[in-house]
Length: 388
Image (tube, rainbow, N blue to C red; front, side, top):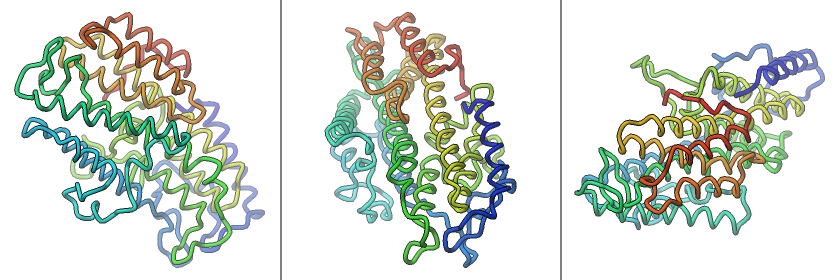
């Protein structure tokens, strides 16, 4: 995802930053960090410390919202047990009426998913995107009332293990994958690494904390990618598994030859060190690299799901892959200066969702039309297949 040339530029700026470190004035609470000390195995939490010796990294708010999303997902997946309540889904989205089983999430009244959905959009456009998710909640709840029957063209129900509506749409996947873009990608690329947050104070430590506001904004962007100290991270209890979730998991899965998740991690490390070093040029190079990498990752995954749809041998596998792909096609609008913006994304979604019988009427030619448009817009391989 980060092109070789970008990596070379980043490496060169890291070395330049190390040579120039004597010219830097560090924020109160942190010592200068030579770029040459950073690597893909560096610990993000312990690399950045205040003079009190404690980590200056805090992305607890991001972890809270991701945990809210996990409960939302788990509830949607419980459709076989009992019909879903659209009101509860909307309450979980807005954190109202104590909808979570985890009391800590209910008490985090200042944390919601809805407020972080499409936050970089204008108020009118953001409301439209949030309403789209609320419509999806209604649709998945309605489909769940037919969970006792087998789905077919024009008939909602279960298709294999998946819940679909009468057109074959698996709204649970629209919601999950869509929020990876509308919340996580948008928050990283447009909000926390955006102009306003990146202009935050970097000269004084926030009262009662050991980080500057600019340092904290950068860390909050990182927290939407992963909560792990090293990215990506294997599960120490099972080396065949990984600890990432949501957007961070898919960026990891893209991997070679389509991208390098470790390069994304190194860009986050380098950018954070550049903030400590008050080295805005190096920081901005990392912002550009991260934005490019994440947009290409989302596009590559979208293409991969469309390709897997074409080779699936059952309607259940076909419609499940396609529903996941729909979520990523939708998410492309949240990249920074998106090459597949809202208008283009909506056009692609209309191609995929607008048939008379929904997915049952969709052809491979329709899939190829959307796939090829994404590949051309982002300059990525239209034959990409990712191991997800």
